[in-house]
Length: 264
Length: 294
Image (cartoon, rainbow over all chains, first blue to last red; front, side, top):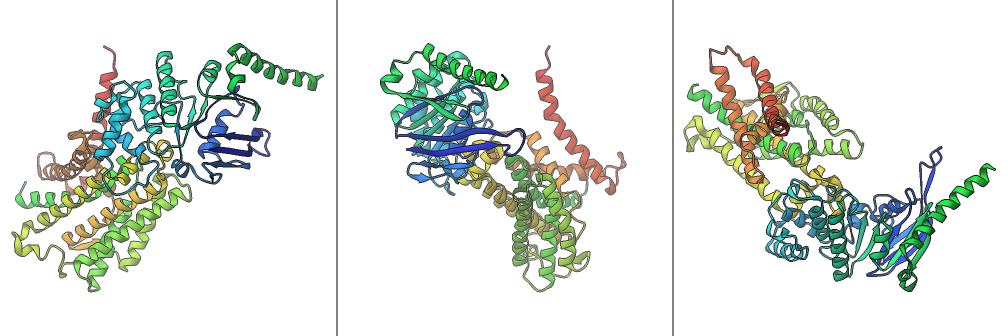
């Protein structure tokens, strides 16, 4: 479903702040796979997600999604295949519009937008059906402004919006990091449930080692712009959070000792 | 206030309601402060007047004037989107350029339309002569209002609202927000030029300086109307813009006709500025009071 080849990007090229955010990354994610991505700050997690979404364009390499080379596609064009959820619960929705209006906007993501009425009986029926999956009662509040919803409710709504239509890929950028623990748990469980149900290929960036192992079917660790760990199946099943944290520390330590060597 | 002054306020308010509807699209829906109207209003008047004195029939002249107004919107969108000029500055640049362009179109600072048949002429036989412009303008404004209501309820219209409310979310949902800005500015300036063309025919002349203050007058309608009739429903908001535009003219006529206050016609701009400032301040004051701890 997603194929990333020799992907690289350098920020502030040619200046003192030059930063190789990603370097020669190769990844192949198959249809229906749920990949969790971890790594320290500046490891390149968000950069990878932004490159997949089209917010950034790579310096080297190609990105292929669903058999199409999307490397040069802008965000709005890639939206026909992929959906995104942001960390900020206000970023993925229009606060001053109603729940049904937000859903109508999202339901036209994978189809052409025309001059027919946006809110049709079909859109309404689909909204009720999908929102009912959340069990938050949002299906009874279709005309409420989204500004009235809590952070958790908004992300739950954004999740429904992101999985409408013929969405093939879902990109999650720490989508529960801004929520309180109970709401984060709720949204995460709903995410797992819904992407599994619709068989959507998912890439989730997270800061939590526990989430990284608990959710999805494959875990990738990024470090200094490169993939340093890629586990799935039994290897992943037997991996404990402690082991992962140790691996993480060791990498951080290597960086430290490299510096010491340099200084010696 | 005399009946004559009342009808004058009504017809001017209706003519400017079209500009107010356009300003609703740019300022409120797209969140794009578009001052192009200062140039596209006299542009519509100039194009229409020039065509009418050149022998075009008044309806063709009026419609062509509206279409030329759309081009002014494209120009501002081009400056903003392609040359990356700040939205408000891009619109000021277009407006200032249009001043010279309008002089070129007319070849002189104004064109009289006193002895030329206008779009109002046929109506003068159908209704009392004095009411003819009010009746025709009311029909046009109602059509424009309903057309905008319907447009904003379509998939394309909803996409335009999303582009104005949250551009990043709009792009992530497959909306080309730049295309929405182009479309919105073209519609708004088309309506403004149409208003300029209708206003010039009512006034009996097109004048190069008739655009001064148009944006503030339009905003008086939008801001005053929506402050008086707050609503979340788009048909109510566009209605508020139309009524606000008319009420503003009536309030102005009352203020100017009252001898006690001692205002003259030259005080119009300061009265307008005060009205708009008050209408802008009222909602701010409300929320400030709501937030103050007791």
